[in-house]
Length: 444
Ligand code: PLP
Image 1 (tube, rainbow, N blue to C red):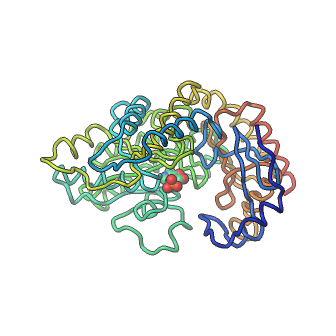
Image 2 (image 1 turned 120 degrees about the horizontal axis):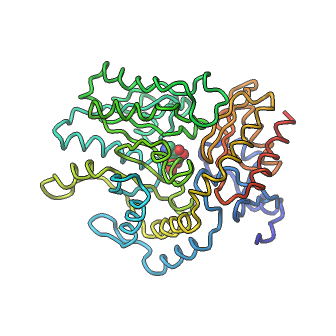
Image 3 (image 1 turned 30 degrees about the vertical axis):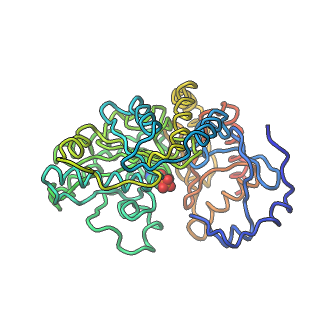
């Protein structure tokens, strides 16, 4: 049940908006016309005006089981009463081991050695450092180059934005990390309006082979990709593309890293996109839905080969000089265990797979609106590109605010609408979401 909303003016008058420097937000525009969310239950938000808004984005790709899950609240509360914190360096708590084991049960076979971090960005830095160290331990410390991809998002920390390829996230911050090269993206016109994997573009994976030709395989540590590029607007890999990357990596001793911060935990209809696409990387990063969005947490799962090379073959002492104050935080672990239990008890990954056809059908219908220039989707993740207005992003922002006023929350990147509904939606909820989107687009 939803408690009585605060009256609009009271909420805004009591909040001083000047001090909070908001992330990835147009601060001045926001503070002139704020969008303040005050409650979340199930698939619904409530804002400070008392409006109900449907959650078309699972929080920020992180609450597939819906908001306000009692089981998680109880687990977190109990954990805070029992053990709020203990140092994670040279000490352990039960939660970290239990979550790592639970993840091992749903990860691809053999990718089951789990290192914890506090955010997706930290998971990416961790994965890249693991890759560097792996090669060093094998006597190939000169393998330091990392191959990323245009239009990729790997978080905001130095290595992550350097290997990432979203222009606006890079252009203001200088040169970035040394030793980074990018493959071309896979957003090609031949696959326009294709839902699922496009027929064209597997050969774009050969950009990795070209990088090998240019730099030499013995300088390349890893290739990192999102199996589906999420934040730029859901670029689904062309048929055979990921398998080709795997082959090239195998041929040249390069580690393949899948950044599954968005695609992990059922978004593609299986636990991980690696399983949906039938391609197993050496390292998987994950975050977001690991605690159903409730407590910050991230993880890096490495293959046994990688772990054994770094840990077991190491003479003595600390094998990996890396870790975070919040690595395997006991409260985050409690939230993760409760979330993973919900995913399992409610078979939520299967449910995502079952809901996907209806989701993709409703998404595809947006094509009828002349303003929609392309649509992509897979599983419970989809995007629609709107024709740009006067400046890039203006139309997208207009859509974001119009949808908010109409009672729906989605993500907007530039002029692209991104949808990632919770898996606990009913088909009728998806209809409500897309009816709202269609109404808004009809007014454009
Ligand atoms: N990697 C991918 C693929 C992401 O989508 C994100 C966030 O959206 C990140 C990394 C960064 O995660 P965080 O915002 O938790 O640092």
